[in-house]
Image 1 (cartoon, each protein chain N blue to C red):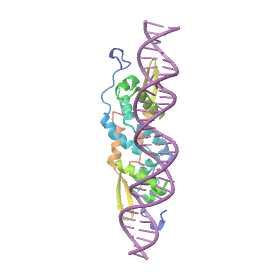
Image 2 (tube, protein in one colour; image 1 turned 45 degrees about the horizontal axis):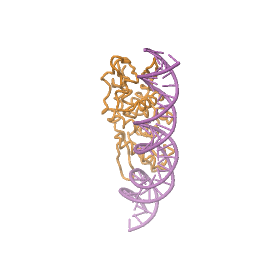
Image 3 (spheres, rainbow over the protein chains, first blue to last red; image 1 turned 120 degrees about the vertical axis):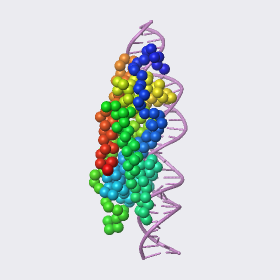
Image 4 (cartoon, each protein chain N blue to C red; image 1 turned 90 degrees about the vertical axis):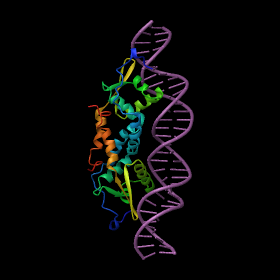
Length: 114
Length: 114
DNA sequence: TCAGGACATCGACAGGCATCGATGTCTGAA
DNA sequence: TTCAGACATCGATGCCTGTCGATGTCCTGA
């Protein structure tokens, strides 16, 4: 739409992230972009053993067990949590690699120019 | 729900982020949790001048000008972008403080236990 | 074998969101 | 004053999502 001779500003550089990269990372951010899920990940990550069982996570929220289970499924489907069933209880643990992938976003030049 | 005498695991630690913290950061992640908006921020952040005008951003996507304008509004409303109208053109620039707030999330012990 | 508990799944509902075409607003130039 | 272009806003539409109650599945202990 913009005529080169009348460009309003310098053309955009080529160091920005690609559409493919954005499509890959956005689902991770989407999974984390909810207060409940953010706290769930935080609760699990900050536990002494690095994991937490669903029963304790349920107690931390004023939400139905079905809702917590749904949020855990979303986080698990996004690859942010590992699921381990031990007897009657189910334990969730964070996947450091997935979290690191998001963390790298905010240290890459594509997002943090300084 | 869980009887203390029959606890399935050690109680959750207290270093996790608070509900208020989660409510504050989640909107920022939500604004970034879209491939188009992620690329918009990346395009702006990686430009030589640290800002970009809407006309160039429009050209980078196969989307309507109305849609791009909507996404820019979302990012601006979330506090991630600054808006500066100069004559006919509008320039958007990233707010490093807002991006840093999100980046700090992934370096805080509440999310990154290691 | 059976009962109870932990967790997942299902169906439903309300609200939110990405996208579009159409239209409005503002600015600079003729 | 008028016109064209840059950008925002509006209304509509179809899809996605957070939440719930109800139900299903699986495991353990009696």
